[in-house]
Length: 239
Ligand code: AP5
Ligand code: ZN
Image (cartoon, rainbow, N blue to C red):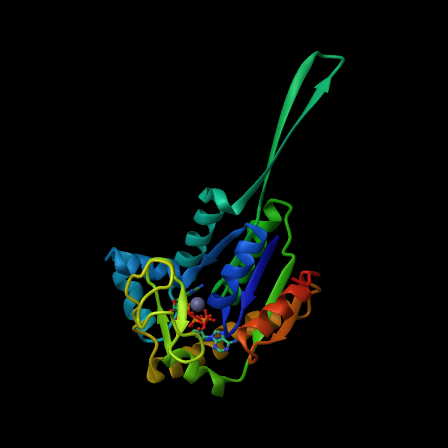
């Protein structure tokens, strides 16, 4: 399965993607999470990225494409393998054939048309295609409450919401018990800028895919379980 989950900040990409990952055993590549891990490690890229993220801008296409390509090529979770062999009677030579194909869910990438173009050619070079591009559709007005109430577990990327999805124990991750934090870009002011960036740079990507058969939009304003059922419908599954 190769799919892209798209949508504005707070639409629910990071909430739904891990469920798809668990169901189909594919890798979940969230470019925002990857950048935040660079920020946490205080690398040069992390320091540069933090400034851009806190201003609601976008990190360069070159860096982001490199990051995705590196993951697709080296992260074993992103590859499904097939091993076969053929035997030629005439030459008594045994051929071993190894085919591996990408299998992934992208969250936060591609965010610009050049990123989408580069992804297309990466896949084309391997004779592969996207199966689904799913757009989480939601009005901007609903996103402020989602973003300002979000709590995250930095190490895993798991997210909660103070009201809509509270952790079992206040400010603690359900799985590890470690503290939850608020993202530094999760405030009303930065959100406004993130939304401007989204409409200017990422909406054209939606148009880019919209004409293609793989594109589907779903109503992301509903509660998470309802959104999940709509997603299952796209995969032709019921539970
Ligand atoms: P990124 O981390 O990708 O942020 P984003 O796109 O702004 O998306 P969010 O993570 O805010 O939203 P989400 O859709 O995942 O929402 P979630 O499920 O958590 O990127 C951050 C920054 O990195 C960018 O601004 C940019 O600077 C940079 N960057 C990243 N990728 C890049 C790229 N490719 N190129 C250039 N720069 C890049 O849900 C939000 C909250 O709502 C949670 O609290 C959740 O519990 C709650 N919630 C979820 N679903 C529901 C529901 N159905 N009902 C009620 N509450 C819900
Ligand atoms: Zn996210």
